[in-house]
Figure (cartoon, rainbow, N blue to C red):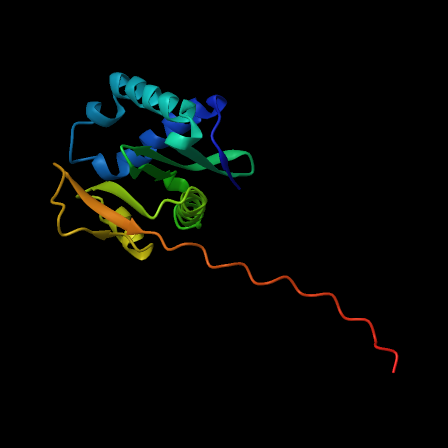
Length: 176
């Protein structure tokens, strides 16, 4: 199930975020930089701001299975640019469709809001995430170079296809 995040989710979101980040940061940057107490506080504060954000400014979506938080995604629109700021799946739930479901829910929200282009930054060493985003249609923009240790990707969003017309009621016999 995909749903909007609530303040009661903050501890679970921050813990999931930390577990997911550890998979691609471990061995590349000092553990204190992604799992130390100061970073954990900063992470929770960041999610607190994101969850409290007005819907016109962005959103936070949670994936939940059997009452357990299994993934989280956040996006923000600022200065006319929408950015997918976070998409994390708890590593114990990888390869179960959680990331694809979160991504699809974000796409639907963006379409409803009339957003046609979205940006994200992905850690250059996170090849797993890069493959996921490529499979979802994200691509680098030749005008954008790397943003420090991150690659910048963009997604062009096609409008939702029109709904098929409702079936018409059968006509009454003419009585001939």
